[in-house]
Length: 465
Ligand code: COA
Image 1 (tube, rainbow, N blue to C red):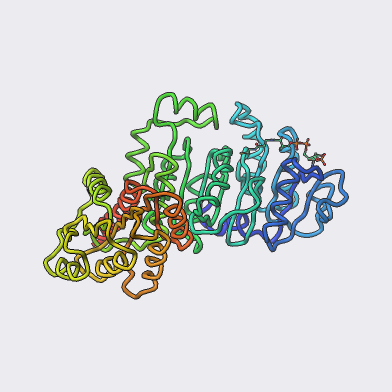
Image 2 (cartoon, protein in one colour):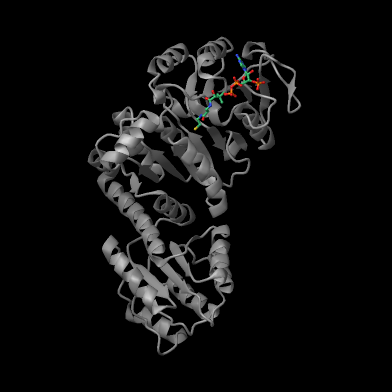
């Protein structure tokens, strides 16, 4: 089902004036109850209509026997009835002129029941759009709509997360809040019987709340459409994909999980590369990259400086930079002179800049300030080792206050290495919307993502000329 005005055509999934939950239940613990509870408690401002043949009231809301009995128009239907009832409910939704439905129900192509899924798509064709079946729903921060049976609380942010795995997505909903990775949207895409990754990429590439798009993918239908849409979307916003099923056995597991054909991995990698999609190895790397991308400007060049109060981590980070093809800038005489004026004589003004374990938070902040001002440096990795001389939390606060200065226009990734206090400092940085990590390697890897973005944008700009 294709639609050229995709953004408008999918808006009712994220910004509906009214939502009906078909299969809403009075019984706590049932999916039809939890979903209604989440929706009513999320702060969503649209109308909500529970639908259940037993009618009555659920959670204080008047319940209707059928969607066709709802006395006003319905934009979005959420279907939570058993699989053998979904066909009839879809017909009713068409009669009611519902614009889109999210089918939560499992038991379709993912378990070999393709015919039923195809019949439902046929009923809907040209009349309403379908997300699913086999999904946990949609969360959208813009309308505070939590139409999922996942966690009630979701941390608002700027990444649209599209997931083909339900359980993984549900777990990640909780995890993102815990780890302070905010999301603009979460879409459990399920079996992709109609709305697919490409449709959502197109939608979120024009969504003002979304700065980056993260996709967990097992398989893909409509490769050409995905490639074309992604290629233009990455010009506007970064897309990071975790594509599972790299290995032979992993591909088999993906196929039995969602019924997807995992496809040849090398073909995916090449297509992602050409479309400008960044492929992450796994969850940690994907979220690290997204964090760096969301919280930083794109670098203006490749001249990178590392500053550290621990010589060892400076060396480790340098090795990692070299392995990833990141360029440590040669410190110019002018910059070295500026640094020497504030640094201890036994420190090193070569890159990595080692301010030594003797440094305190005030000195560290001064060095960063010099690097932010220097025209020789495009981006900075700040490595922090907990020592007796420096309070990690004070250090974190010093960096946060630097951001308010006018010269803070460069990408920065930080690592906080140490015990309990370093953990607090690391959390303080995340709350302050900085790209902070618990290891030097992860801070470097995240700078790699930013540099990749710089390289992509420069290449595309050059191609335009
Ligand atoms: N219209 C509206 N409601 C109807 C209905 C109809 N035509 N026919 C029945 N219902 C009601 C039922 O009466 C019931 O409400 P009740 O609790 O008040 O009795 C409610 O719909 C649900 O039906 P029920 O038969 O109790 O099903 P269930 O809640 O046990 O399971 C699903 C329904 C959809 C949750 C289940 O079939 C399913 O697919 N579970 C897996 C979901 C999943 O994991 N999805 C993927 C996540 S990633």
